[in-house]
Length: 252
Image (cartoon, rainbow, N blue to C red):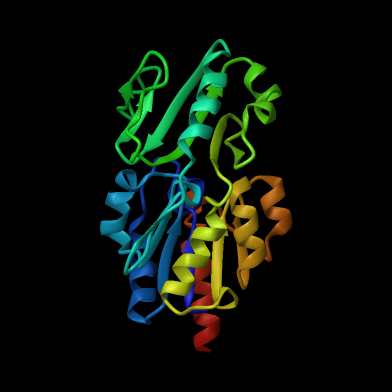
């Protein structure tokens, strides 16, 4: 394997959102062996800076593939403004829906979210024409939202559900797999030469398409069924243990 690609939350990161010293050490050893290390995450770039300093990723796909930071360039796959306005107007018509919008200008939300610190708006904001809409997030305490999500989407968007609660709406070209393909191509590495680690719905395609797909033991059933291997949970440093065991076999 020439590349290690991993999801972050509930996969590489422990439940308390930290990286263990063991995981950091294993990743550093991979760098020393000239193995590329990449992340593919639903998080925006601003929320992975701490992990970037600890791991030194060679490339990163953020926002489910809406923005990929490559060694030589940045690739953006945003939602069109017409589709974004259409989706937001429909979401605003549903009672009890928490809405957030990840954009190139920052994060907007219709309610205060202390851990995210968004710009709060009463209705959906008027965005500058040059603003990129990366992702629309929605959640609800009732099931009204989830029952009608398909009717809210436009032809050029799709959705996934994270943690069985958070609806994530992206442009159809904004997928983790498209971001991963761009990252691998930028480093001259084939998907067959990569191992991917994940836990949730948007990790299924990368697990299928990379040379080796590995699920952490806390992954949802659909991910575990697609994986070539299952390693320990995120709180057991499953990713790092798999890499170390694989490296020892390779060296022998």
